[in-house]
Amino acid sequence: MKLRRSGRLVDMTHYLLERPHHLIPLTFFAERYESAKSSISEDLTIIKQTFEQQGIGTVRTLPGRSRRRAIHSENDRRGSRRKLSPICVNSCRGPDRLLPGGYLYMTDILGDPRIMNKIGRLYASIFADRPVDVVMTIATNGIPLAYAIANFLHVPVVIVRHDNKVTEGPMVSINYVSGSSRRIQTMVLSKRSLAEGSNVLIVDDFMKAGGTVNGMVSLLQEFNGNVSGIGVLVESEEAKERLVDEYISLVKLSAVDIKEKRIAVKEGNYKAFV
Image 1 (cartoon, rainbow, N blue to C red):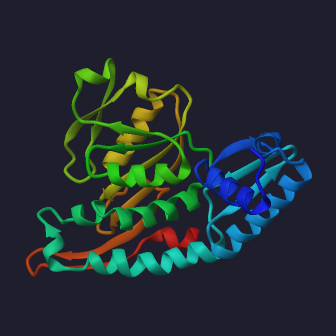
Image 2 (cartoon, rainbow, N blue to C red; image 1 turned 90 degrees about the vertical axis):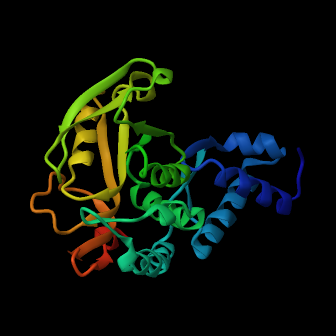
């Protein structure tokens, strides 16, 4: 279809935004708009400059190809950090959020698509330069976080469960030690859901000692997979022994007084990556 430059810019921008991390040959756009490659290159330069100026993202080019990635400029990352800090940290401070066992009630935050969209953008920008084929989480509270991040990385989600589901076919099962209760638990994953050798980003909504996350790492070994990164929404600072060392957290639960129903939260370690 033959379009004027204004029309090409609108259509090309929409196309790129819908396909982050995709490699697109320059000839594809030239044929799509019946335009010269030199004109398409100029259009991509305009889009790249606008993306970066507005903090939307960036366009990276390779010889003969155009690649738009779900990664944000430094200004946008810092802006997202300033916006997320009061939303997440302040929202977690209420005493009514404290649950038995030192956990936090997070369902309302996990269920708010606007907040999860912002969190997904931030985590996607942090992990955008790492090879990620799928995002893995465990049912059920980690699912909204996983889908929010996967949406911007443009990769599928793999859900680990505690019990078998007939509809998912043959399963791979392992036993792991829960970091907080030290109980032996089971997690399973469908054989069809994860390809051998996949690069996996592991995410969870809450981490104490890291037993669940460590269990997913062990389960991933059964598929000869690689851990591209670990992200948690909230981590507890009171864990005496941490089973996971390298991870990125958004909020840190630094102190809990169950008797007085007082909690103290602060920013997680994610600020070192933005």
